[in-house]
Length: 303
Length: 95
Image (cartoon, rainbow over all chains, first blue to last red; front, top):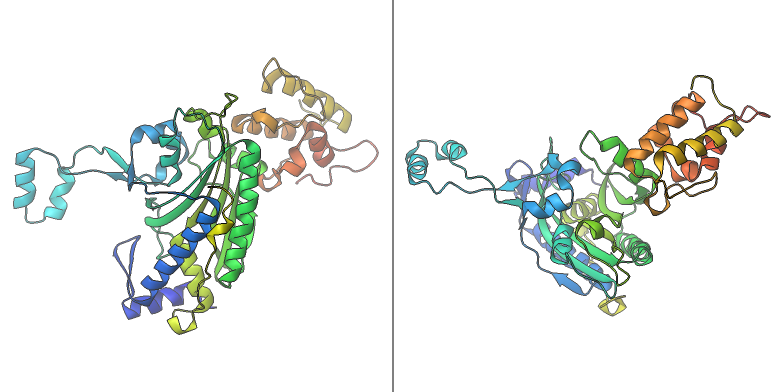
């Protein structure tokens, strides 16, 4: 095992990893190729479950997150998209300022969009108001943004790449989806030589309702995480498996033919974390990397 | 409540309290009703249930013990945390 800090230091020394902004990580060289290969392998894994691969935009509207009750759950993570004001005088002041990077702070327009905090909100938003005649399985990948008090390259980025599979259907559909997917992800990790553990987890909800939400999540075992080692006594959650019950079905008025709200579940992959776990297991030198698995899409459970 | 309840009292009084304060008027639970099925108890109500249990039994339940194995029903809560009359009971009670 190469501990995480040694992996990162090695990649930095080689110039294959750098951060133009804290929490925003760039890659090049062999590790960038490996990252792309892992991305394809995980997309292929998700394709076994969900043939409907969406291309979602990098930002989402405020109204969708309000509808999803995001602001009471995770406001601490939010990162918004703004632009400079249309006011000509303000733009002239920025252009003529001896420190434009400082001057823009006083010339920003109110934000109109939120940089994706997760992928699945796009799915609920786009299916709002619909009746699902059959279970729906969607996969999508996007850059996501979560502001946290500290960042670590490949481990905890301000921005990172997330692929999700979202299941909408009955409670039985959602539970069966999670059981299938946990098995698939577990097997996939093993083919990469990664040995971890799947454990019950909770989300870091924002106070004051944090404890209540976390305890219910823990008690109902609504969230599981695949934890992979990145040092002798450190693990990271590389994937999560989440059962939401009828929450998003209710919030977005997505129903079954019976009129009941759909149950939703999602499985998320933090691609940089999978990359890090792989590098910790196999080292930072490409010569030590095993070939990535070829996944067969004809195993797909649902079109 | 001030004195610690025994097992039978805890079951009876907790069922009565939940029916009176936690669940909708159209719902009646008994000692074996699955408390967390169908959204019967939500995230706010779970805190009330924990607080009630702690006060009734004069114990503190750490968050790590808030698991379905222990909270599935009133009887399960009692089996886990309440003192039975014929033994020292409450083996899972956290100090």
